[in-house]
Image 1 (cartoon, rainbow, N blue to C red):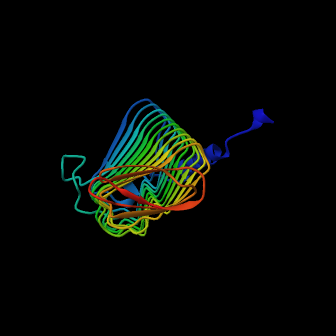
Image 2: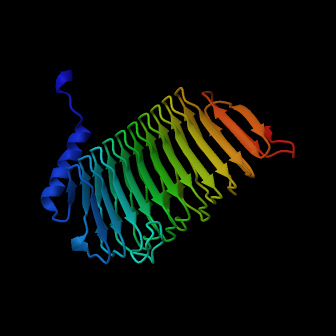
Image 3: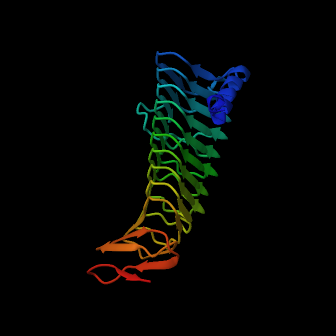
Length: 323
């Protein structure tokens, strides 16, 4: 019966919210219209809000200073129209964007769910020296935007925004600055199934990474934008699978190594790979591309026939394409 159908994912998330509220005294639940502001300075594990839920139209603003708990904001749910702002900084400074001296924790804002019309913003500012998980699972299903900014988190992290899902009409924006010196996973799996845009920007990540935006799946009408700036990685975008109407645009700028993504395009959207000041780029694709080039820039658009394409920088007047 069509009238009896229900969204099982919504039921599961609502069940988890009720369960968290009943089991954790440190949970923070906000169903109202007023704004809530929390500021944790030198906090302990027992005093930190571990699960944050915003069901109302008011905003939640939480700032973590020199916190050293084992779990901070383990799960964050936004199902109302109000915004959620989480900022991890050094409490000794007045600016919310100031770097911290380095705080530790096992899981900081591990599971993020945005199902409402409100925006969800998470900022890390050098506060994660020994944190193993920083916003590992991101799921944007609503009309609000989800924005995660990893500032200058320079230490090792095993899981940083590992699984990323954009299934709604809101945009999902992830920025990695100089925060990934020895991080093994940075946005490993990217999925778009809705109309919202997914934008991943790797700043000047100069160290080698084993997995940076490794698997990219676009099954919706929204675009996926991935940009690498001066990234020295041997595995950047291993697979692009496009079955929807949205585009996938990957930009490499001043990236020293070759990149060999496998392109599978069975949808109506376009896959564009743009190279600026790259020595070499090779790609295994599902059709010979339509090619266009300008000085120090390679633009390739793939459609659906099997073949192998290699593009190399040519003479000073332009780029040479070799099939």
